[in-house]
Length: 242
Image (cartoon, rainbow, N blue to C red; front, top):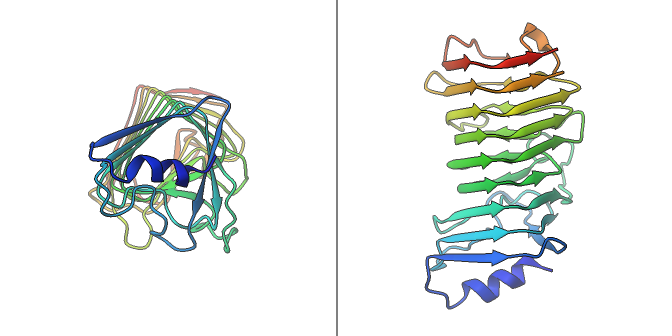
């Protein structure tokens, strides 16, 4: 089932602010990503519908794997009770910039299972009750590159967990991890912190790190390329199980 066709039916000549598309659990929707950043937005510019809620089934990304999944009209995307799979083939698959399925804008994920690593490069994202799996040794379960992100009651497993890193002039405002579980992770601590500026706030609290790797600083919870005293960093009430 091609999501393009479903959206065409639901977005054209629709004047409501929000459209909910319910998908049966055994049905797979495919979405073809574009060959360049910003291409093939899920909600196009000029659409009257501001919010699209996709519920149930499997969301499978195909195509060139570069165009981020987003609402181009300033709206919001909501994915709930879905399995999200990346089968796109980027022309630079081994480059960190293009090896992740990208989401941008404002996005809300509820009770979703991610079979591949994703990158968020947008404004606001929330993950609630989600499961992330890093299936490749060089791929994180999720990479926050920009904006504001929150994780609540999420689970990270596989090779690597969460990466927080600004690149190419991006600006991360805050990342909050609460009541989540990391591990087992075979290559990294739960959270890898790359380049951040002084205004970024990172909070890791009430979470369990089970059989994660110690990393380069023997912290188990995190490792950081940026001095943790140079940005707003809070860790509290976490549990480490070695």
